[in-house]
Image (tube, rainbow, N blue to C red; front, top):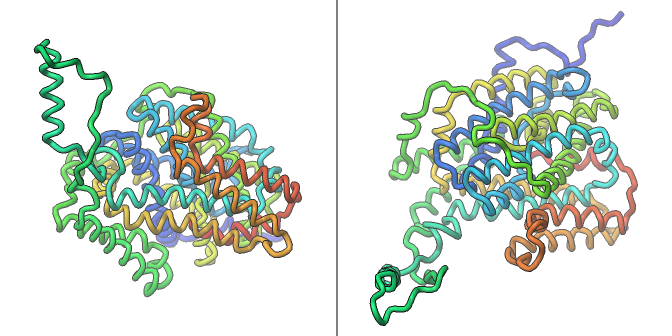
Length: 495
């Protein structure tokens, strides 16, 4: 009887496991902390609460990774070298929810939608594992490209300043504000000749804001971008894989030297703390938002399906339908856990799948070690406070790369699509990208439509997904092509 251990189940020495696990953590770290920074700031949460989101994210990354790599019961865990992290696909809808309802209520609504989507995803995982034929590369490539294009707005606003609020391109001149204040006071006092000021009257900002697009901030972003490019160009192997992280570190040092980064909150943060569930209170379950997040999760699970199939081919382990269902259920379970512990939807990180191909190390216990490291990091609030202290201009330089790479991943997948003999594929891509741009270019287009459907139609990612799936069915039908899905997954080495 053969006692040969499959490379996926190989137990490596502890020192090697730790080093390889840390490498996996560093490769996915920048992407993991970016989402809570984006969503936390969109919700207008306090710096301490944003830091808490980062800790919760790392903690849940660790839990979801351990479940996926180790396996828990016969229902969860694909038992492959998979790292789980927050998906960028859900950022657009989550930011839309945050912009509509900021603060604690928005957080409760957001986490309610995530919990609901997680439960539904667990239930429909076996069905989704059979839906691959509706999401060929022409569909997934288009969706991922639209995700990247939508996210670029976030990265650009990080560099120059948000388009609303204290760093808006223009501000109301001081003398105009003083005039309106005097008028309001006189009218309130009943002074003759001063009419009441109409309710809701505001002054138009006409004066350039000196805080918008400040040159020192642009310089920091440029240095971060240049560092990433230099490391990617001249470094080899592991260092090249963490170019984004190196760029952020260099930008943080530069921002500190320029007096733009402060460490007061790091000093005040605890060394060790426990991540608790339902920090913002009882979640609010809005049916439309749950449906929106569920549709996003279906797209995420289809992408995970391609990743699992590609990883199975890389590691010489056959992925059958039950194994695929276990992996997809874990996406849903990770999302459910994320919503409970104040964090976000989870999926397999494709850059780590790429790392398996680069290193040739197939043992799933490397990812188990990485999961333990992430759990420990999630219990260290000082680490989260340090990340939260980074000025947005530092993240802006990295955001151009991270979000641009999402779009580039979609383009790479589309590069394998047959546009020559299947000319209608170009129509699918063209129309779906155009539909996905509607909320980005005309954000108020839905003002006369029923308010209940606004969360559905204000997400360009969701609109592009629906458009691509329906147009593909119209032009191409629903032909299954597992080989094409595997090829597309291999093209997506970073997302």
